[in-house]
Image 1 (cartoon, rainbow, N blue to C red):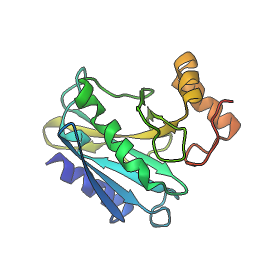
Image 2 (image 1 turned 45 degrees about the vertical axis):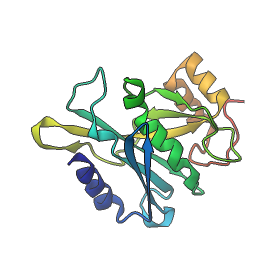
Image 3 (image 1 turned 90 degrees about the horizontal axis):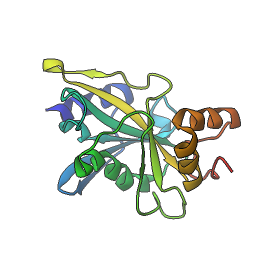
Length: 184
């Protein structure tokens, strides 16, 4: 099963998860695994999907699969349900997710935030390698970055690369769930 291989890859890189949450979104099972910041080399609390790669995405090679992760510091466990919603989005909407795509959710990502969307990107550094499985099936691991409405608008007008460049130039701590909206 693909999910077991994904979880084994996570554990080989980050060790045993500190928490596991199971969600059923539109009858699609999705696990969100968590690693505490002090227990992994990335230095942030990591939340990763397990189950998205069980199905191929419309418009993509059926052997190409995807899983997502989100890094936050300080930890924000309430991101688990929205991350599960994001991971089941392709199956629910019969579409695909790729680098630069955004998905806006109905509600804020967690209580006391105005962040309400995710930007899906290939990580700048090789946090996790592509998982190569039998019969040419491969799983790519992409990062989900929380967005404010203003950032979603900026990305829509200028593109994902422009937003990422802006964040880099402004030294935006995109991993901080308490950060202010950027761009202003």
